[in-house]
Length: 102
Image (tube, rainbow, N blue to C red; front, side):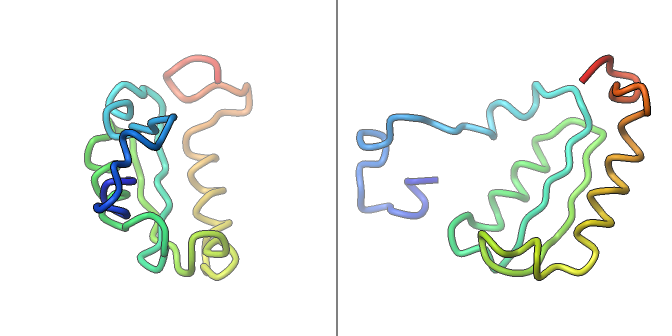
């Protein structure tokens, strides 16, 4: 992300921690919900789309509104979408449906 946001900086030399979600997400074997806003001023929307495309199923996407920190508060249906995802994929015994314990 540093390279995309600050192409003129040697981000790989400056950043100590790499958050390479794109290479890790195909290995996640539990349901995934990606939430993101086109109005996010820090993380490009295209990164959320790439992450979703790389994820195994089951996966869902919910498009939010608003900026990086306040989008959830500006998005109608945010709490409902989150609750629906949890109810669909987590059973009352605290295990992910068909995947074992959380």
